[in-house]
Length: 116
Image (cartoon, rainbow, N blue to C red; front, side):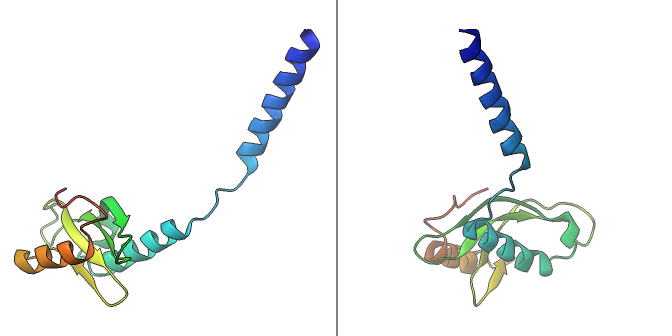
């Protein structure tokens, strides 16, 4: 009985030690999302203040869609805005809500919720 417990304990320690030294696997999905977030950050007033949430990839259009909040020119956070990134464009919700609504329905409807 003691030998079985010792063996089980040794196996558990070995597994934990192996898990601690293994590198996390890279995911193509995470790479695509990371690249899209870099494109969004590049067009912000204060790139370092960017906070993202509910980011996903549309299975049908392959657009990366989500919400971003970043400091504006006055230094305040105005609230989360929708963003869309495709190979051809990077859009952040702005003054033309109707155009963003149209694009969101066209490109992102099956990836993330429409409201933050």
